[in-house]
Length: 154
Image (cartoon, rainbow, N blue to C red; front, top):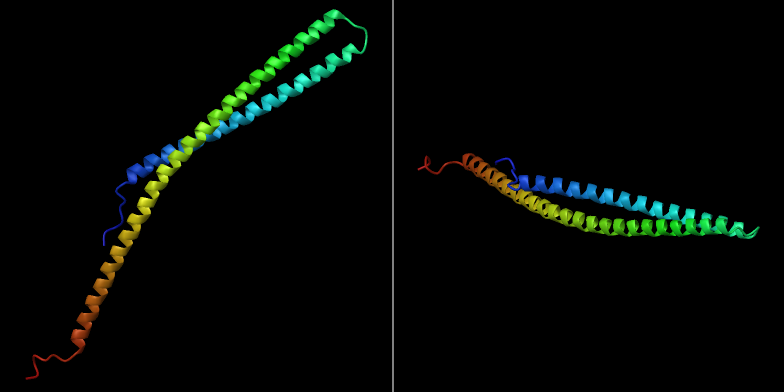
């Protein structure tokens, strides 16, 4: 029996490469999301600390220039936090898209893998049938030799 050869081997290789690339892209998107979430947390923490500092200066002597500078700093911190949140949302949507693309590539690869499994099973079944046929033929030849021939006993 011939050695098994999967005709769609090149397709499987291409799909494996594509799936691996999509998986890596998903991992990179996941990393960007984690970085963006950390940036949002850092911006929120910085804004809260600045707010506490500005609120602490109000308890003492009122200095309009310090209050104006503090409020401007708070406004900038809030803008930075909003910008970081926007980046986080973009990273989350990019991660979702990368996830969908990866799953699509994975399904395409699994289709080829299932086809290969079926082809291997069919090849194995054909090989088993050929082997059984050969064994049956050998057994019938052996049985024919073991019985006395009716041609010579007349």
